[in-house]
Structures are given as structure tokens and as C-alpha cells.
Image (cartoon, rainbow, N blue to C red; front, side, top):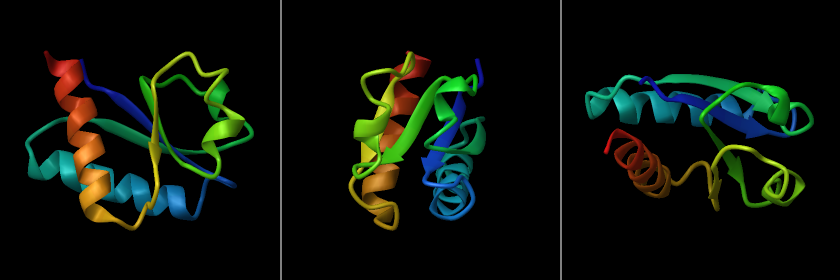
Length: 95
């Protein structure tokens, strides 16, 4: 199974794009195939995916309604935090 990862920000084209590229780099560096795409907080719950990565500021708007795991990031620009949470998720789904 290739995990389908959605990165979410307010409008789906700014910070979620940077986060998507970081996640793709992390997966590639670790030899893990993924499919990643960007979404906005208003419509992200209608997009089919296996997991949602979102900021702590926006997470309260979707976390109670999401049908997939929601991974909350304190800082999209903190590569160590992003890598830790991405690898934790990816390792949990390949077991």
C-alpha cells in the first residue's frame, strides 16, 4: 500500500506545499513510496487520503470530524519535528 498523505493549510497552496515537499523528501530519503498532495482546511475532509498533516492552529477545525488519522505539527518549518512525525506514521502503517 502506498500511503496517500494530505498536507493542509488555510488555502492549500502556501505552507501545505512546503510541507508536502518536505514529506516527499523525507520519504524518498528513507526509500518509502508515498503519494502526497495539498489541501485546504475548508475542503480537506472531503479529499480521499490515509492521513492528514496539519498545523496546531488549524487542527481544531477538523480533528473531531476526520475519518483518518490527523497528525498535528507545531511548526511546519521544523524539519526535525516533521521528519519524526512522518517517519512515525509511515513506520506504523508498514507493520
